[in-house]
Image 1 (tube, rainbow, N blue to C red):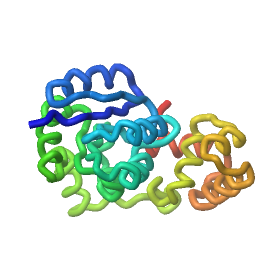
Image 2: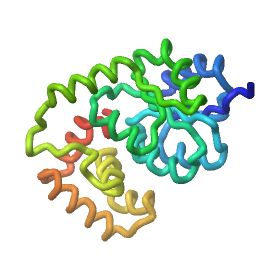
Image 3: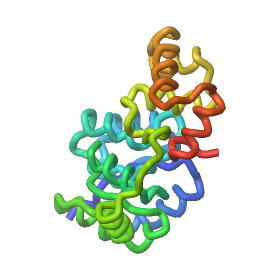
Image 4: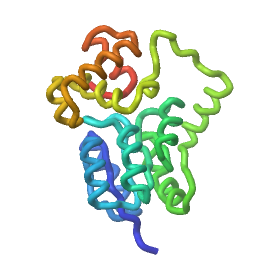
Length: 215
């Protein structure tokens, strides 16, 4: 059987190095990247069989990267390897095209199972996540009305929010997203209205609390 070609994305070089050792036993690593935009570009160039990606990544988070990848490289299987175990993220990951979802703490034990499952055309979810999903279904946690989930924002607004929280200027955001400065300002205003937040500092704290960016 041909070994799968695997592209890996994580913003921590030590995590990438550790995962690479595991992955090289299971397939051929064709590339590694450390931000979501580089991932989208490399995936189109390399057309891998499997993409391992995190949720919290610079410039473009994993969820929005996955949304693009399912359209640009639909043949690639997406497996999230992340710290986020909350049902909101898990649900959104599978909505945008994930075929597997692992928590980093369990990746060493479960990566082989996940890769084998997705290559067979199946989905894989780490058991600890399955348990938390079931718990949330039976005993849903009420979120404060004032705090909307990050996934409630449209994809473009999430991109703008992430770049604001990463300290990018309005001009830089316009350049990265290839939109006008006025469009960036419009999205910023809509984000603040939607989330009931009133400053860059509040937007940044929100993005950090939602796992959209890391400090």
